[in-house]
Length: 249
Image 1 (cartoon, rainbow, N blue to C red):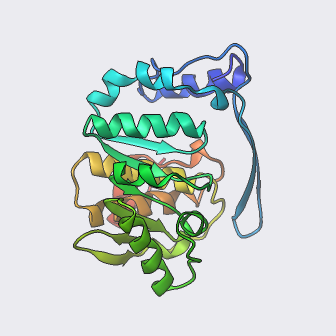
Image 2: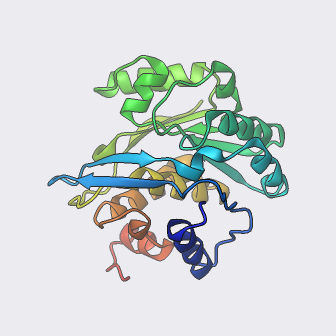
């Protein structure tokens, strides 16, 4: 984070929620990364990002997190920090026999050597096309894209399909897991919420089908709210939604 209000506010929020932040690094030379987000009448978003301090995350920072990685059930990565650092972290986590989940966003190509290190990958349609060359438009192309990713060495594939839910492909399963039907207000951070919830469920050793359903519910709740971090639901809200109970703040 930068040494500015955009860096200090999230840390304060983490502390309020009881989340550890001792490995968060303050970069005195760069401002915190920020995003300008616009949302249209249907809830779809467009985002312009100024990476700031995100762009200075280094392999040294990954090494500093080594003890935490060693004791982790799941290590979740995405691509908003330098690719070299991400790839280093993935390899290091894989060598420690950790389950590595990659949310390949923002979309970009990846070296083939990294795919066998992944326990699970979660591309959306656009990201899947960049990684596989298959334009995902229907059930057949969804399956084809997932098969290509598994052929590259990924153990499990979850292809996110927005309001339609998510497609799960493993050695023994190939199925579409529907998302709850909601009226979308703002889709910002839906992918982040999905991946966070999915990783939680995997860390709890839930069956992958159950884990994906849990993540779909979490993401569905998030799109009914404005904002990014503010839209992320608590576990009690996800459970209440799944049980058709009244949600409470």
